[in-house]
Length: 94
Length: 309
Image (cartoon, helix red, strand yellow):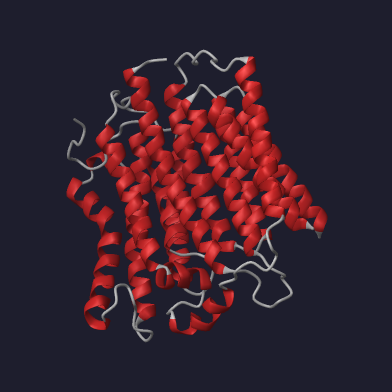
């Protein structure tokens, strides 16, 4: 039951982020929105990684490693995106 | 305890919405950090303590610091005129609602017995050199991915340096004496925590990425409090620290190629030594790269050599 709740929240975050990434005029808010989309994907991945907790070893570690990698790459991409948006603002002030 | 999961899922979604919908960008970023904190709770609930630690230190912590610094620069600019008119906005709303609904429908109709690699990992765990399965996956079974991941950080920092920034950093932000005193306590404690996370990572939640993020956080606090001046650190040292992680990782992987005929395949007897060596080197590189990204947001040079065109 609770699995569906987390999957719904994940899909919701993904759609929410997509809406603001497309419609927001501010570059920094677009960066935020893409990060929220990523968080939605992480939520879905980790929810699917959790199987029946009663079966002993509770979770599948491979998706955990994937999400860890995703968090690191998202942080790096955010840094690069902020620099790109600054450069854009410098060359073409809003 | 299904009500807790329901509450957490609702709060996560509501915080994400509140963050993106708030007019003020500063408020949006602060709510994004709050979202990260709630997500860390959710990761803990879903049995992913490694990811929860990384979320707090990196996803919410350092990314939040990066975004706050970016907001600080842009605050004196006039906001862009809102382009999206009612019609296209409504279309986007309908399209993304459809996207969310279709995603949820697809997810809910997935077979519950999905491919599960847990048993494969459990079977090989004893030969991997790490008893924490997530570390075993990151540093042994999927070492190739992690090697490239560390390289991604270096490439992202190289990208920000190559872009340069037009504005020079504002000179001499006088550090608050309270912040200074606080930083004198926080920085050593953070370094200690980073060392602990690194050491624990092979047999408990933690590891190079969490440790590197906490160490970078210590660096950020030290810079903000005026305790450290990374622009005066020797440039060659900064570059050496940056390339240490991928260098050691690639070196160990190549030596395994020579000795065992397969890239990044560790001898089960020596694997734990190699893993701790790689993790220590990677921690230094990850911390340097993340601190470099934070400094680059405001165009502060990192290392004494001037890299800006």
